[in-house]
Image (cartoon, rainbow, N blue to C red; front, side, top):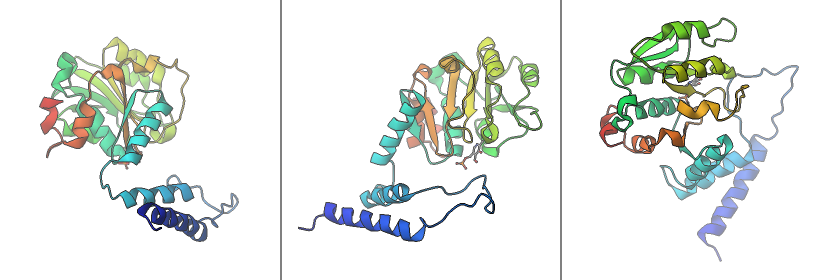
Length: 251
Ligand SMILES: Cc1ncc(COP(=O)(O)O)c(C=O)c1O
């Protein structure tokens, strides 16, 4: 008997076959082929899952999103993660959440200063401007493009409330020095981890988590540390309002 489920099974089997015919023959020759900085990397499982999700015709988050959030949080050893549509959105959601009145005197307010790097990705910077915060730029080391720790220390002033910067091109910035600074001055640290998911740093696990929000972007997810103590990310993703901030009163 033909049922939607048997048709789905047939479609997915065909999609797998399609992948083999269309893509699986591509090989990589290390002597001839370029290693690209970025690009589409997928196998049959990805394309099958993509079609499987589209057959549900849920155009917003559904079972795959829920599964991704749970598995992603598990991978990072966190209680929660929030999937968004891009790395840029992850940065915006993470920083904007910190403007919630529920954070009381730790809330980021217009005019507060956020330290970031002078050389980095545009959408690490944009959420600072979008929230009417003031970026304070520090120079990076030539070669690895991570913030120079002494410059970071020198940039901290009475209005500094957060540090937001990326682990550029997979190279972790000086987390030890940065963590010491953010703890000493009670700052938020927002790590744009678009380029560096899975990279490690010689730091005791747990040490980083006192006041850290990660932006695991590229796949667009915001891991949520339970210590941040509220669930504003989810509301903000669902209903950000025209300027991305309208709903902050209710977060
Ligand atoms: C460091 C960094 N932040 C943010 C982004 C933005 O990610 P997306 O293109 O998914 O919005 C990128 C993209 O390459 C990035 O490298």
